[in-house]
Image (cartoon, rainbow, N blue to C red; front, side, top):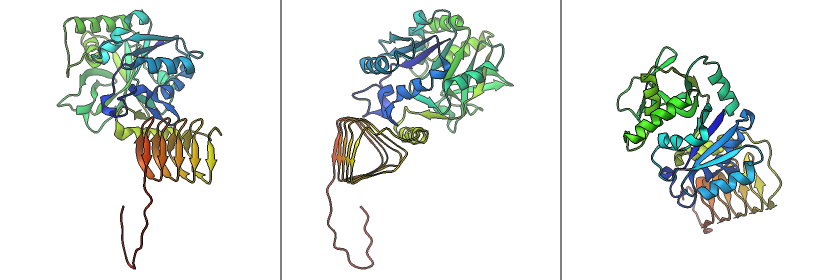
Length: 334
């Protein structure tokens, strides 16, 4: 089985953090998002990992080659235009060939590893493929699956009206790959778009319409890293998995409250860092209290109290100490 990871998008929902880097390279819990995804793929031992890249692709390729080329057989496919998930998968057609595939989105991290998700797919029995699903509060924001018993009856991308709350979780196993690619080709040649893009959901629906059997399996927990509001939640949950930290940073008159992730050549002076703080390499923290926060590389943070914050690379955040003379029974908020 081969793995396809669509990772070409600009990640507009994560602006301003993706002005200078692609979405899979956004840093949380000690490494870029793509690193967490590939870490969870090691036990699966796929025949090949195909990364579909585009926006600022050199950063992804450099990081993956340096850290994972000795673990996986890595191939890159350039999606020159970002025209949707269906187009992204179709772009990888030549590398995929006739192999069965797992499609794993480049901005989702699952609490479990991919070998466990593959086991859930495997027990589905004879089918053309299976799709991981989760229950969602607002079906209009997701690809939605409607079931007939255990089989998929209908799939629709961001429906206005639906009786189902089963959202597509961003993990797909496809056995009849040739059929899927043929349908995607027809969709693209005939310029059939939904919400302005060539949708993988539409191709899967066409498979169902043609009589191919698709099933679902429940995904225990998905961390959506494609939105700023959920990025810090993913950082917290991933840090909770960590068992200790490497002693690769310099600390003076400071307290480290685990769980944290602190990169190489980080200097921490007169500060309290943690819990749930991720500090990337070559950063200096001076006279700060930092918790539930992500700080990028080569940044300088001083004299501030940061909570529930995201700071990018090469940033400078400098606060100002205040002096107070407060009378009895006073209440002040900053």
